[in-house]
Length: 67
Image (cartoon, rainbow, N blue to C red; front, side, top):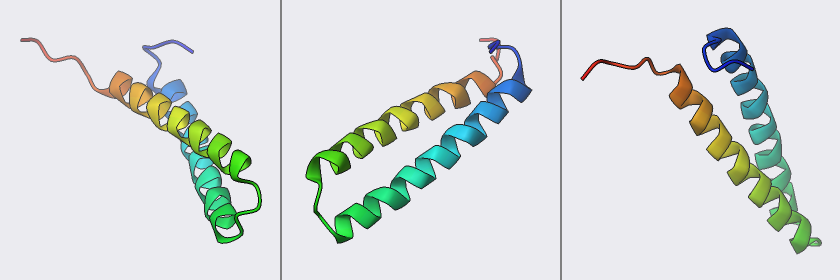
């Protein structure tokens, strides 16, 4: 994916946000029935990684302004 291709970045953002929402739902289900604490921690870690990646891609979409 090229950093200068806004369409590709936007598409990737949509996919990452969808995965982030799915993980959030899964984490809430696990919190209601705390059987596997290790899996919940793993999912939370992945969710944070996705959040960082989303923020990084969003920053690529912000146009550079001359100083």
